[in-house]
Length: 142
Ligand code: RTP
Ligand code: MG
Image 1 (cartoon, rainbow, N blue to C red):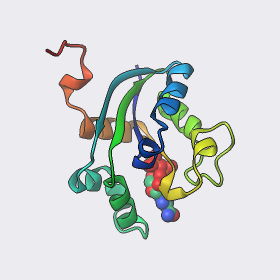
Image 2 (image 1 turned 90 degrees about the vertical axis):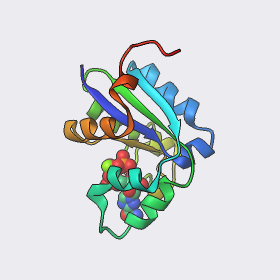
Image 3 (image 1 turned 30 degrees about the vertical axis):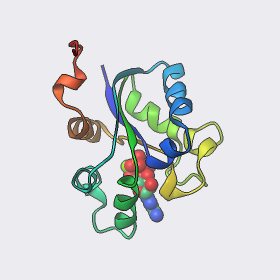
Image 4 (image 1 turned 135 degrees about the vertical axis):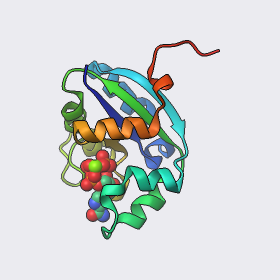
């Protein structure tokens, strides 16, 4: 079954949007396979956003994503990679349609409240960056 990586960004956590965003994902029917809150280190941020290195907004992106806790998730469902991207809306909330997460909850491109993997290759890479195989399994913790 297809899986993707999603992350509620620091401004989403700060603004109390964790419940609203997760609720939309669950109501759609996607399964939450794994979930954790963490503070991203500069090293992890650089690996996660490696494709954006050298772009004008890169430094701001790294300092922002490391500025406070995020909620990282692995989601599963048919077509979940493209489906979550549709639910997120356009990268710039100014262009994001009402009814999308960014359209409803965000105003600025640098504070667009949610990340979602953009392809199967990105999903596999990002899931492996944030979660260990054990965290993705069904074994009991104790
Ligand atoms: P994301 O990776 O966060 O899911 O968003 P995305 O695919 O829609 O956008 P992407 O092109 O991957 O850009 C990553 C994040 O960088 C910030 N950004 N700022 N100032 C700018 O022009 C600019 N462009 C992108 C956004 O926060 C975007 O989500
Ligand atoms: Mg992206």
